[in-house]
Image (tube, rainbow, N blue to C red; front, side, top):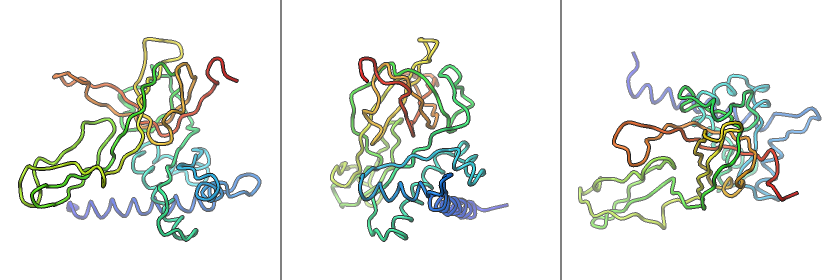
Length: 265
């Protein structure tokens, strides 16, 4: 029987192992011409293009490390985080960057693509790929993934990590002095671009799923676009409902237009 502390240590060891294996994949994977494409893409991202993400073909990961590819499907949040941590380590260790930028890992090319009507509860918290039509796009907003609250009485700072599909998590009182006079510090909190879209089934206009785009994915699609997207399926409580009714939401990791918008070439 393991203790809670032992479980935490084991989880850290598992995640560290994933980071090391992903780093090896990014540095060593070669295409049919012998090009180390992900190493080269990282170099391009931080030098000439200044991109904030790199695209990773799931088939490449599966060929190099099948177990990692399977874990991405089952534990996507952990694997995406491990990949982005591996990128930071590579930039520090091999490219000698003291304060490297955070580069998003965007996975595509999963072996199975679902229609919107095929997305089921069993896919909860799994990494899936869907195909559909963009039915609605909202104006971009701002999301804070890491908020910092400050006690106005003693100055103690409290960090809360946020999710784009949940209400903001706020401390009820100061962890240091117990007072409730708290204020959100917008200067120290982190912010990113945020956008909500709705993806419609190709054959059934009644079937739609809400999706969230973050950072460099914002404003990359328009209504009527035919798209393929990967992401993590979340089940979130419906707004203004007292009963335990949930809706499906796709936290998008990668999105690609299959056809150009009407009227464009």
